[in-house]
Amino acid sequence: MDTTALWVLIAVVLIGAVAWITLSRVRSQRLRERFGPEYDRTVRTEGNLRKAEAALEARTKRVRSLHISSLSPSDTARFDQAWRAVQARFVDDPHGAVTEADKLVGEVMAARGYPVGEFEQRVADISVDHPGVVMNYRAAREIAMAHAEGKASTEDLR
Image (cartoon, rainbow, N blue to C red; front, top):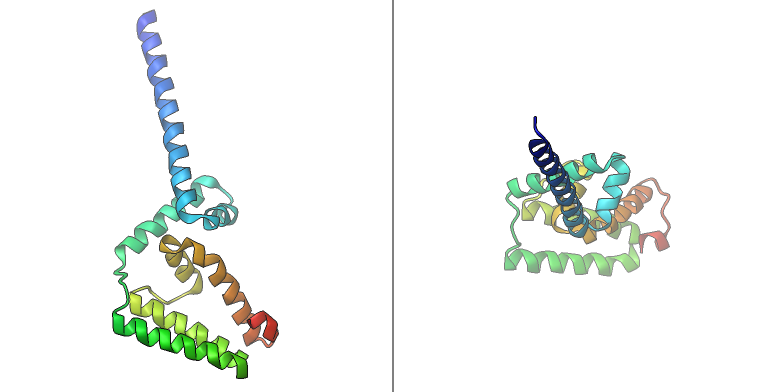
């Protein structure tokens, strides 16, 4: 191989490496912006940046394959009324209201087309379109579980 061919090969390899690094950074930045705190949580959970980003992209692909829809005006009104009733019930029956609120969230998700099976799958699905809500949803779930075990105070439920 002559010197010119060697330099061309080195240049191609360097350009390819720079392009790969740049694309990786763009991918990471895009996912970080889309998922917010969920990005960092997934990286911690997976223990590896590549695995975490692959998991986040798999979530996105999965949710795209679902038939998620907006609520109809009548469903919106019905769920809004139910939510207000749960909030009003909290004053007299905080424990019952929290249980009812958790059930209502599941009903809204089902009405929109989200699968409502296992909690972690629900959270992963929600994180694609509503990353800002997921951290609060996880916290609420922990409180609801503590409540079910009789370990949550009224202040926790608030």
